[in-house]
Length: 143
Image 1 (tube, rainbow, N blue to C red):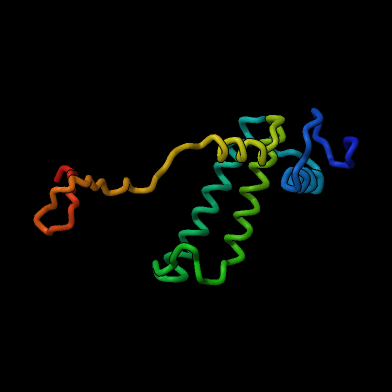
Image 2 (image 1 turned 90 degrees about the vertical axis):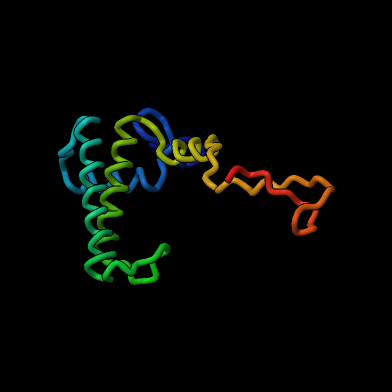
């Protein structure tokens, strides 16, 4: 199904992203949906995420002795690439079963997320009287 602009549309008329289209293609190639309900598909996402974690831990500890940094400077193992793909495809399939555009959901979260995890700025109060160092700044933070 496609809309006026030639974009591919989902079952209920939402625009499909490339991720949604790839997930549908994989399902068609398999010939059967082995996780036909939302609940089973959600469990599949969790299982794939666990396999991804195993691949990452193996890469970090077994392959590089715990010396992997972020961002990783090593060649990424094929097992990590496979598990990233499996996890993403399972997540896109779940989004399709829920009739939501995953990219739209992520964009909404990012645009509306006002959390700030940076450490607070050091508060310096200028009194004009000077401090022990003659700088004119007094640090009023509790110690």
